Image (cartoon, rainbow, N blue to C red; front, side, top):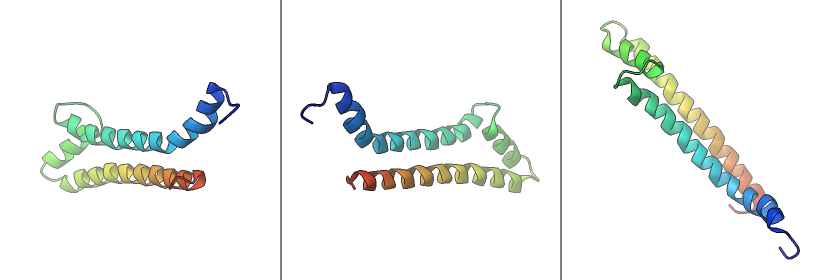
Length: 97
């Protein structure tokens, strides 16, 4: 790093090394946000979580509620898998894995 300015060090060394870890934090935020959609339904929000709760609490539409819940779970799993795979490839590319 001799001869590199502080800006060059941050942009070319520190950010690329930290970026996989930053993306894992983004991954956790996305999964937590999907979790909060479901929890928000218990306090009366008007979003996907509320639709799931209405379907589960109505007598004849339990299957629809379960399908909606599984869709939210699969969205979370898909985002989690995509970001984890990308971060792993990035770490291998940087030689830190």
